[in-house]
Image (cartoon, rainbow over all chains, first blue to last red; front, side, top):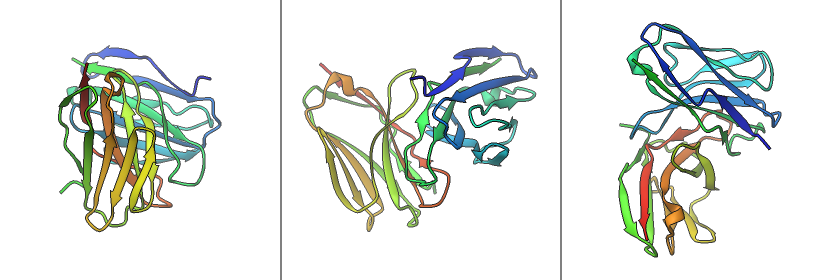
Length: 114
Length: 111
């Protein structure tokens, strides 16, 4: 009963490096989301997807890219990492087209850019 | 002005106390309201949701919505140390794909 799985759990990057945060879900959910959470700032939406091949920007997309080639996977790519991208990143999914249904979250990736 | 405002706390109360967590919002288009609980080093999990003004009760938890005042609350009765977590309010519009989250309130229940 895995739900939403995020890897890695922790990562330290140097400024200017790039990396991909992985997210996979086994619930056959169409809707997937990437958030970042900074202390005292709640969850900010980075990108979201309503199905394979369809992605859209959220509130804070600059410095990130996403792709959605399968229903299960929704990786988040950081190009040219900057200290401002130090944060905890959460991936979430939702199954139905009814927007008031809950989102299911992974346990996050803690990323530090030094 | 932020769409959703939530007092970040931290809030510390003794075991058995009644806890009140609150959010205000500015967008009158919001139609449904959620409370998520987030334990340390974990992702948020849905605790309660409602889409009408009034109260909704689930065990020791009561969610209250006042759309006229743009104000929602979560009450925890007989609080337990296991309730220690960060609580996030979230709200959305029917048909929209996105939720708007509050900043989260960190709550500690002391034995």
